[in-house]
Image 1 (tube, rainbow, N blue to C red):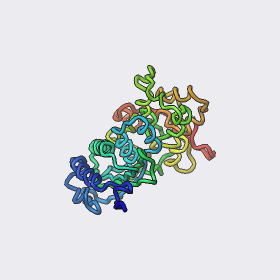
Image 2 (cartoon, rainbow, N blue to C red):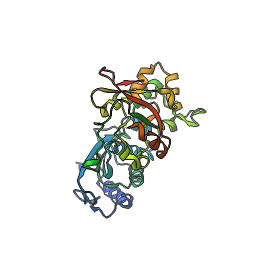
Image 3 (cartoon, one colour):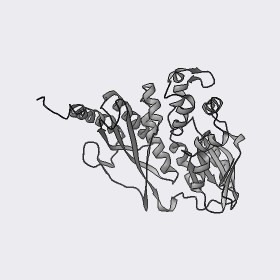
Image 4 (cartoon, rainbow, N blue to C red):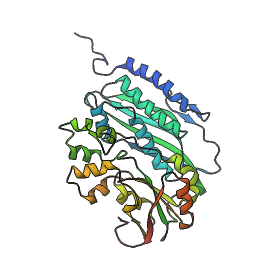
Length: 337
């Protein structure tokens, strides 16, 4: 009888150990003196210091079916950035500074170059916002995932002084809405993209060179989700609230930060919609309303502030622009485009 082993079941323990050692070298540069125990232990330890009255802020997210595009193209160098930045942007809307990040990666089989590329992207994104990539888990799950498939999730923890929390509660009629541009889809709407482009049946459009995009369609779709922390850190005291424009677009995300009794009115002529969205609509039967309900349509972050400080915020934040206003309303429609 042939010996039955974990390797025969599809789990390679030797490869897992090798990857762990390589990951340690990749993430170590993101560790500062606050990291007391990181990769390799059962739990990671971080010493919180430098705050008077800290409130911890946490968030978890994934990359969604953008992973399918990465797999189709065999490109994994930026997906880790997507994961970190999607999570980091979710906590900075509360005014928090990111402290540390953990990841969870589930694979059908452990492909060392793929895992290393993913972790390197995470480490790069963490370094850019001075956030420690403190730990994670890579699980081999043959039978649950098809060969070549994988999934990943991220978990970030940040901190903010209690009296500096941004929760939108003071947003009122007459306040100004400021937008920060997106560079494309970020990490949302990819299931619709695959449907309208027929990518599950034919992946050839991904290699198409599109003049208006200045790159191939695949490259445009894989543009990494940017972090807005560096751009916004200096103006946080001037803001009343922020909305990270993710799945659901402006229509679903802006109301999450608005108090009762007010709505948001956007002037869509004030910003440029990235050409990837125009291309997707031209090649499909997706309506304008559906586009704005699914995609960010060119705004990655929306800030709310008093009119008296709006010019100063726009001056300090690269590429920021006034895109709308807050108005008194009791209607069910919280966003007017």
